[in-house]
Image (cartoon, rainbow, N blue to C red):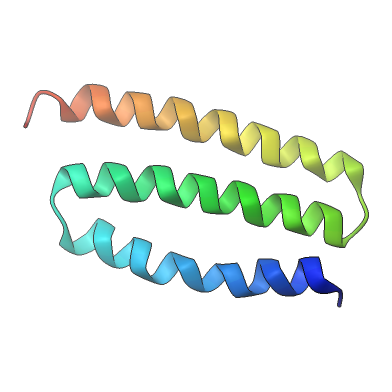
Length: 83
């Protein structure tokens, strides 16, 4: 276990407050939590790619970043009608 895998494991605890904000907050708070969760997931995947010394795993993090961006736009589009 190196520093990158340890950092990725420690960053997993960041999903607890994000989940709390998603479940107990307003819909706009859910959108912010969705974007933050995507950024955190991308960072965790990058740390794991570096920790396992697999440059091909970086592609997974890049795809995660793109999907996060698109999902935020879609969620905001449908959320805009209810605010």
